Image 1 (cartoon, rainbow, N blue to C red):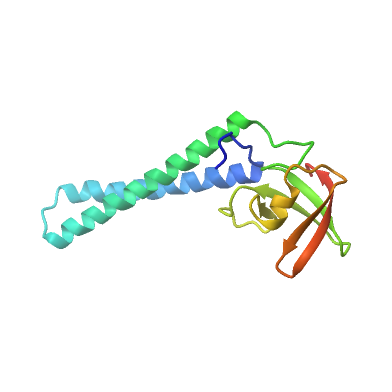
Image 2: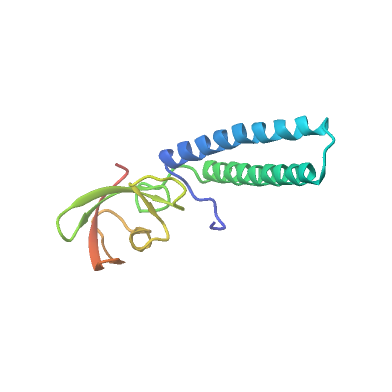
Length: 154
């Protein structure tokens, strides 16, 4: 993650909030199994299972903390830019073959959304910092391509 807080799109925010809610639900289930096992005295297999659940709980806590930090950073960063492409921007591009597509620039592929383009992908890197009307060149799997930034924000 960048040293400065980066904005995120509303769709990315909703996805992170949903993931955090799901993780909290899963955490409650795992924590309940740990509490239930406190009353039981068992063998080494039970102890190993208890350690595994405690490890699972720690991984859940770590991910919940990461998501909470990212959402806080996004709040500090404010809304995505509307005058130039940045993380969180929604961008409409026209490719050299005449096709157009509207994509969101995200920081990672955590959201399985076909409109999400990660900031570290070839197209994402090419678009960052550009404005409507700019032409960008990038390396696609099928070879070099270019695209024009048609608009930002919609």
